[in-house]
Image (cartoon, rainbow, N blue to C red; front, side, top):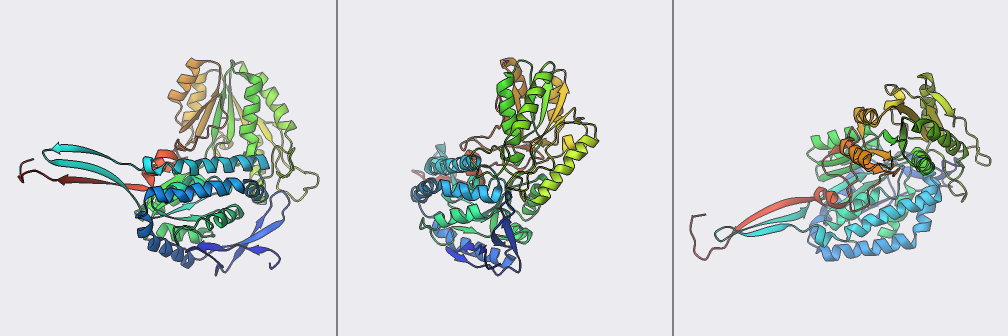
Length: 492
């Protein structure tokens, strides 16, 4: 183990070695190479981070917001200066292409930019003379110590959905990144260490379930943010809520696109292929099901077969590659078993991406783009989040039937429509019961100044990540009614 770097935690403004009894290898999924070892930190180290954050909170919340955001301006500059290095780390540990990693970090930096607007975004409101000589005010105040538990698929972007808003609002923040991809945030926290933030304002604790449960159960942690699968999101939400915490928990998805006959088939095919196979399908906004309506079926299917078969798969560090590996051998095995299940349920395998071998990367965890046709809407595969480069085709006769299938899903993260009809687009966005809608867009990812919404089993909580929802989540409203009359009276 000594030949590999042992990752540390960042607690109380210091890098500290964990006392963990177990370290896990962090592997490059394209090569199976061990990049580092990450500690499964015990609950006691979570407590140390929480205590440091609580000790810092009073001074940090009293720091004027105009001063707090100066640290974010510095962070933005450092992230931009080191963007290529960070993206390279993300590709190494996550597997996505370098272009995808660069784009991910850019979206994270956009959240830092939005959070610098806190002096305006955090404003309350007031009204004079609600009664004679009485004024009323609403102030926003930080909630205290907050934490985020983030997933493997976007190690650079998703922590930045939370960290900038949390500290800009005056909270102290603890991050527990995925133990599969800890290197990206380790490097980002090395940059954060250069900001000169007060000790304890931000901390990073590596770990697994013990660390997660310690955050969920700690009495001083006031709010929890989470992104991951729906079963774990429900667990985190339930346990956090039972302990009296605020929680925003983004879950899984089964995202669908509808293709109408009047869509631009060439462009639609390219966009849907990018949505389905980009990041090897490992994103909560990846298209998993395409519903063709009427005459759209034949041409779209033929074009998509070509797009799936021709996609270049390999190491994300190779410039000509369009899709990298999946995250672990276990993920590869799970995805391939779901492909087999879909075929067993009667779907036709138009393109089979199982048992992929990539020259020069024989030890990598590769699944090539896969296309299944005639998937039964009630099949298990139609209801299961695959989280891999697998697209299933369903055919219906009209848009009403397509929308009905979307609305019957237990998930509600995203749905998209491809059409040249404004009337069809309006009907779709009005009736589809999902949180993120795309019209002629394959990945309806909200910009940083909009909330990243999700409905049904795709989200547990009230306030979403990003934008104004983030401000609501990381602040508490305090209403003050004050009376300064010219003459004292008990009359209102």
